[in-house]
Length: 516
Image (cartoon, rainbow, N blue to C red; front, side, top):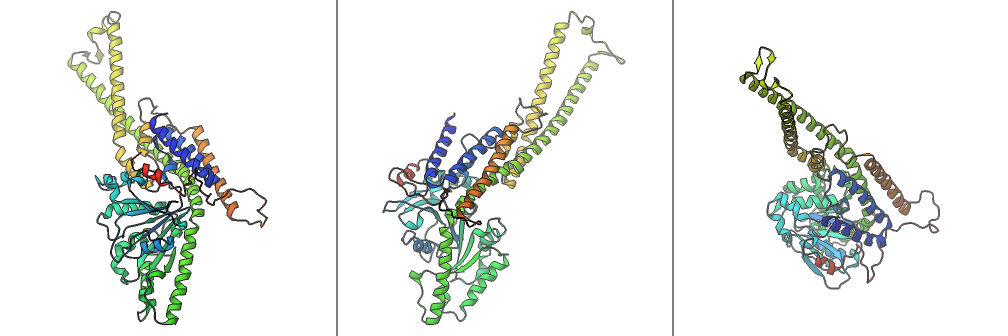
């Protein structure tokens, strides 16, 4: 096994060690991801230093997004019951902060490379993503990301991401790329707006990205839209109008899914003199906070379904997107090669005819080359000429193959991005254009009977995992479950000798400061 292969194998085994204690169902999904990896390695969709299992976060993930000074950090501090994040009326933090649990009483702030180099976190190899957007910025990963540890029990079993102010970061393009990455991976997304700025129409760009671009997603139910610091409107003549203005703004962007909440921080509330009004605000706040906190608690369950869903989606993407795209590209390439051969060989034949005519080898329609007069004596020369001609024709053919393949790479890369195929579509296509690959093959390289069987098994496994999860959380028959053995989705308590994925040891994360 190559060095890159050993590295990725070590990471997968490390992941399996953690999941063995925490969640047997998810442990089994790692094996299913390995099956997909084998298919992708054969086809060229993945390199041997990569795995589909490392392309998803394995911990429950909660993203906190929104405009600057909308109370994101204050909300997180209140939820953790720990003053971890700086807060204020201005943009106080310009980095994405990943917050995770640690047994140590002292908090630690680690640089972005700790995230960029650790496949267990959602920002693994994020520097490559940033580099694609802004050349040279990938080397400044510490300017975009940081990791903080916290001993708050509320963090056990989950990761919280605090984002910089959506409209306060100067490096906006890279920030948007990271934001989209977070949204895709998160199990729950809290989108904060500031009730102290009741002019939502002035925030069109922010609303478009955080609302218009998310409402049509298949996972739109994971978005909670939160109008924070609503206590500041209590002194308005009609505080309901502030809420109505925001609801109209979101409705104009087509918001029909997700919940809309109005909350404020109990520890930093503006005094409300009217007893009835204060009571009404507090009841609404407490009800909404309770529902939000309950959703945050449930992400451990949602994470399990997300990972199984990612397994199913990856398998179906290979079968329904990658394979047809490779087949179509290969067929197109074959046509270009055949046309290229026909034109090239036609030109070669025409050149030979022209040469023979100029050399006087033709008498009318009769070919009378001098070297034909004694075929036996010139047999060796004829044999050599035939070999040379064959080599020339093969050289032309393989040159045409290469040029035809190169002519398709840019379009194929764009197609892969458009289809959101997980894997390198261009590399998989090039596997089919190698000199030893037959141009008349009907199946892509690596896509044979064994690969089909393995893929079908993964899809069947995914269905079984969902049923196992359903058995854990549902009971339509009403039978007594206490006598049955069933997989647990609850976090196993960490021991001194083994840290679970819910609780990454700080020492290990500090070692990750050097890129793997």
